[in-house]
Length: 200
Image 1 (cartoon, rainbow, N blue to C red):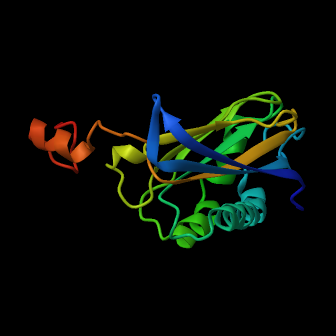
Image 2: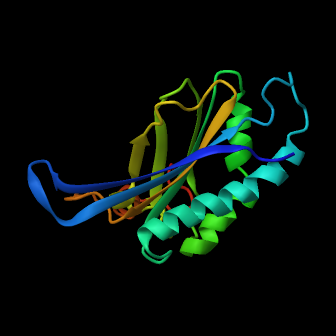
């Protein structure tokens, strides 16, 4: 199986003012997308997705990671990260999930940015110009709420019905003027443990 990449899209968003107040440090959000032919489209129900996952996921992980790191400048500079996939209307949600929910995809990014947290994710189905939502969290601290962010973007002509948009996202900085504290203060106030935040 040969991975067919139709095009890539790189977006950089810089927030200078939030809530009418200038940001002390501008927030930068980066997204890198690859639009690929869905390797399972038109084949009916495919029980074993593994051959295509093994062939495509490492290529996409390496490509998108390089796009992000080249745009940001270094892996160390990335503070929050996430991933997303949108499958076209002829595909299954499982097809979108297959290309991003594998260490063969995500570990390229984790290693490049020195991350410990899991990659926040979104996987959906939609037509061309569907919203691509990339949730982010701090790469090393899952309780750091200042870095709970979501990149929202789209590609006007993708995904086609037989395509998948695969994306990585990154932030340099957290939300400007963040002031809702973090999970650890909540846990302390509620007398709960980090490993069992609901106390069940």
